[in-house]
Image 1 (tube, rainbow, N blue to C red):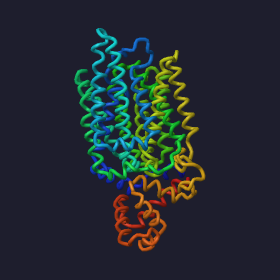
Image 2: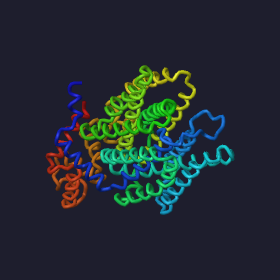
Image 3: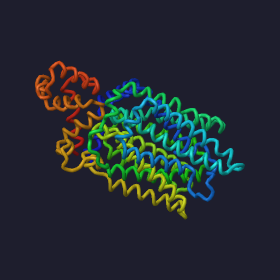
Image 4: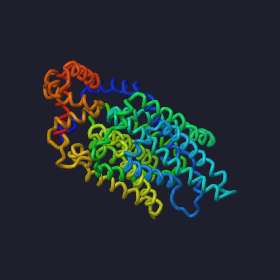
Length: 487
């Protein structure tokens, strides 16, 4: 353990490089941060946290929270889209698709915000508006997330994490702002937000090679990342119980949830600069224990319920950001189709959330439930922690496959991880791997059947993305990461 702690901490030089990388990546494609920020604001206002719309569901006799239909529609969309990701690709590339997506989201939000007006005078109409609005919102928000995931998978985990930090900052601040306004203002925002959100999403595609983004991973033979899906399901289970407990304890808890989210954003940014991308450390030694601590506080210290709720929000938001970064790694580093990875993992997360709301609704004792969930999270973290997770892609890579991660060479894995983090193209990754082995530009050109001048251009781009000035710096960085992965 004595060697483990310093090994995962970035040195001052690396921290400086990462800070510079934050500025470059966000400045290069600001529309991506804005689009995802508006997405986060919309989902937060509607069904991630109890900010708005606390009116009861019009479905009489339905015991579950009114966001249940939204969750079911989202889960169904993620599952169907992940299974049919190749066919969906052709649809998503159509010119009419983004316009239709924005219209569907706005229309669904309009129906959803109008149903309370009919709840007491025309109950049947209220039910229809509620159901149709929930389905359209659930399907629409899932599609926005999946489209954004294509770009996040293209730019890699570190760059994705930087964009997501800024996005959640925008979204959380926006959601809290609208929670302070009269309810009518919040409803107008819910209906209007999809238009700029989809516009910014369209603009963010202008900053990436569109054809390469949509063709990414299409020839890869996919395999379920089972460990990642189980992790997502446990995370969702905690979210479902947490959300129900917050609604029951605080009703509109906008300030409390916002403070938790802001704290999580700060923690993730700190970790992304200070620590190497050790997903095991971030998931199972920081995120899960944070959520478990929040549940323990809720269960055994009623006088500290606000503190417990805040810690829960920090843990959930932290886990969400790290999950998105891991999806970007699996897409970029293992050439997985982004829609497949994000679709399956988010479906598991939302299914877990649905299960959590059911458990909370039927549990006779909320205190006992909170303590039980805390123990479940701790045991799950202990069980799922493994130094093989990164090598096996949390189940996405089969043992014995010809992928580099199975060769047992820490240097090859370090090349893969760093290439993914810094957003190298496939050709740049090939050049980088040979540079690390000490090949000259001439030898690399002969190996890859490319002109030496072309190799020089690729090497320059690699140095620029890594923010280094020489092959020696590049090799030293790679060997340092390889040593970390070998522990």
